[in-house]
Image (cartoon, rainbow, N blue to C red; front, side):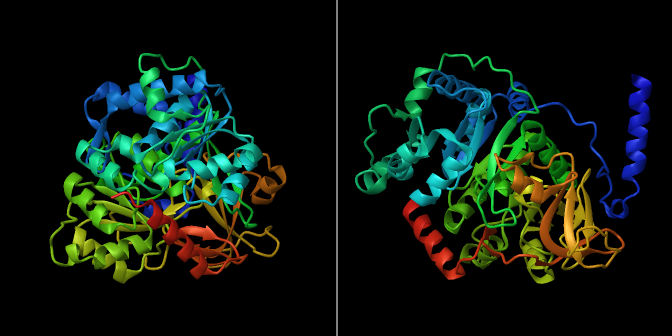
Length: 505
């Protein structure tokens, strides 16, 4: 067996070295990370908690949650979920913004053997109903402002259990009092639970001495269902396994390692965690890096974002292009009231390497801003610009370790294009989505022989740098999200209106 494994490793290494992009990697970035460990994110966080139990895992608006407390709280919540009928393979929706309850919910769902379904908390009732029915959600954990919407659709969505929570529960004492005075006295933050529903905090309290459920969790089990427009505009649930989450995060961590310290570098997370970039690209990488996370519930509230940066001094900050532009225009940055010098690396996946934006950001921070390319179906892995080497302008970067990208003839999908040849971008990696939940025909249209056919048109140069030029089908991106045939202004107004209603400061 040892000889066979050695031969396989040699063959794998030789095959991986054939790709042209490897010669452009930063020094020290491996061509492959195989063999990957058979682990889950629960294993990863448990390791962090054993090594440094009293270090903060989550920071949120002045409060913090230690690794040791996080493990015990998520164990308690998992026991509570199991006691209320959550079984292995059940789908549990998390209708929450970036807050500690969302991260606790993810780990509790996994510990109960279930599948987490992070959902946009700004969805309308109709959107929630479609989403729940698409994957058969049985249990919902929701923030108070979404509670009534969830209850209104509960009979039609066949949801069994609803668990409500409030931002107030995870605020420090000073903010908790202000929140009670100005938010809970009126509006959607004040709710009365209906019979049979549960409070998140009461579950934690009731089961605080319980052991985590004795459920076998395999790295091959589904961990998360993330929603995507695919290439059709239909909302589809992309299934990712525990193993794939770890692998994706390891690939990104290996790529940014020249700029980050394992264990000690803090991550600020302004991206919504119901999106693949936030859930896997940011949070997943933070967990694999054994880092502390600074949660940002509303990235449009730049004052609060900058307060968090000033207070916690994160080294890693992902975002979309509008986020970086708004940050650099902010008067606190312009007038030197807040320093961004702690930031060593930032990633913008909707951001080709436009020289002006990159240079301005890097001058202000002293760190690096890298662009990249990915989609939900590739589980956040595809291409990133180099961290140490100067990126190529307009390129979205190079394929990550163990990722292979090819450009196929856009008409037939049968002929691979030569360097510089325009065609459909296809991605292959060991950690792609398993497929769309209960949509085999849609999966077959998106994945062929292990390749994701992205629907994006572009080309690769002779050195393996990837360039995106257009799409096969009409697509609008607003604030980093895919939007299908709808007016951009209508979408922006709707999202900003909902964000306004969720402001918690």
